[in-house]
Amino acid sequence: MKKILAIIGSICLIYGIIVLMIIGFGNVFSWFFTALGFFLFLLSFLYRKLSRNGRTVLIGILTIGFLLFASLEAGIICFGHKRPEAGADYLILLGSGVSEKGVSIDFKARIEAAASYLKENTGTDVIATGAQGNNEPVSEASAAREYLIDLGIEEERILLEDQSYSTLQNLQNAKQMIEEQGQSPEDCSIVIVSSSFHLYRAGYIARQIGFTKVSCLGSHGLRILDPQYYTREFFGLVKEWLYFRNK
Image 1 (cartoon, one colour):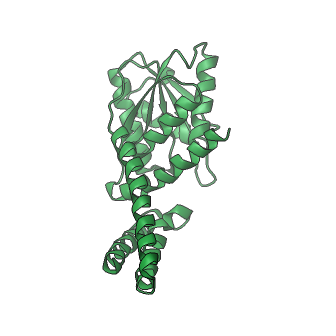
Image 2: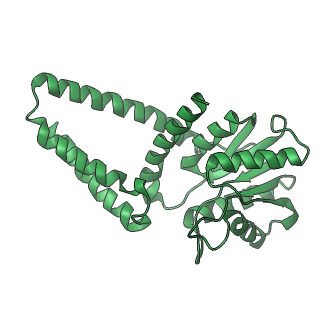
Image 3: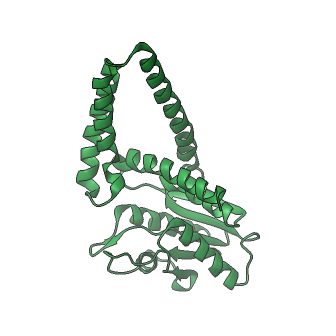
């Protein structure tokens, strides 16, 4: 067990450094795999000092934790590869990062996936969501609109929601816009477009706030960051579950 902990710790540490090199040091969760690697190294050194019962308890805790994590991650991964329903009333495009150079790789993939769906389903309108962050030159919604237009989507089909800073706000504001269009969120069908790792949580939130006809369309950015983002979604989903459970 000591060797296993040390090997897994080494893998996590190396991967954590790669993540930091790609996405930077600003986000707290960027440090997750680096911190996990150091933690597993510490456990490997402490393992021999534990009593036999202590080792059994530690192995039990690690096994239960892994099984819980793996079961939820399996759902997140499978949901991210489902195909959306055709002919939706609205497509809700969730925002992501924008810089002076343009939309991020992940956001670009989302917008291109949305454009592909809209070209195949000409009766579907799109709600581009996302406010302007502190380090963003324009709102995520307006950046998405401009790129969608460049990809051949008619401007009159694009609704702008540029006041939201989270997935929950994205969907709440989109719901309000749909209601302002004279339609009921319970009756109209929506397709949520986001990165594949994000769809399980986004779909869960959509149903919690009143949407009933929900399907999702996933996109892929840098594959090397998938473990980072899928792991983050585990904690994000737990957070949303606790929020709605206590609401």
